[in-house]
Length: 292
Image (cartoon, rainbow, N blue to C red; front, side, top):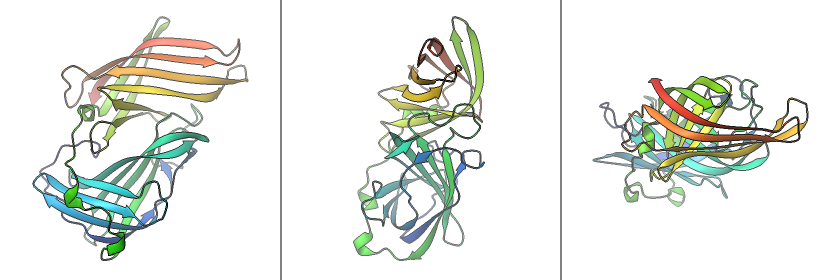
């Protein structure tokens, strides 16, 4: 899994240096279906300058984006399991609401000298139309970096040798298939989820992407706990407009494993919008791992 920090025995991906043109394929949802969501971020197609350095703990590459005034002017890639991985958090909007958006670049060297892989965008709030297939799933694009020349000195970016080592996070143990059990006073609800965790290089902030075929929930990890905290507009059963809030907290297990077998938390979900719309749900929220 590209979401994890462990290294395989496949050997390093090797040095990558030069100016590359980034080409992005059509946006799809995370399953490859036509994208129905409304997340807006910058476009990162165009020239990038990449320099790399390999050391005992693996290879590191710095990538500088050629577009002026970009909010994401530079990335640091790490060699993980034979691929290049970069994770960044950048401003964006979802359903016109301002929010941080996690952007994940995963690239693999090809024999023809290109780097190809995926680009994933995950807003830090749940958005889209709940229950409408694909409307509230993260966006994915096939990504290809084609080499166009040597590194241009004025555009060469940060020194890869000067980058600090990547720090592992205990949150990276949350990955795989999980059965979620929501236990409230009125009953029990279960569903199966896929979970992938992505961390910034410092390891102090991660996003665990929990998703099904219909929707996703971003669990944000910091300070040894995962949290969910967002609001969105909804249409009530009565047809009127309402406001939905989702607040949850999951503590890191005392002795976290990789993979994490069980994650337990508490949730509060509330809808406000009038007598025929108001509802409150408080429940225990448990994730039990069922497989890879």
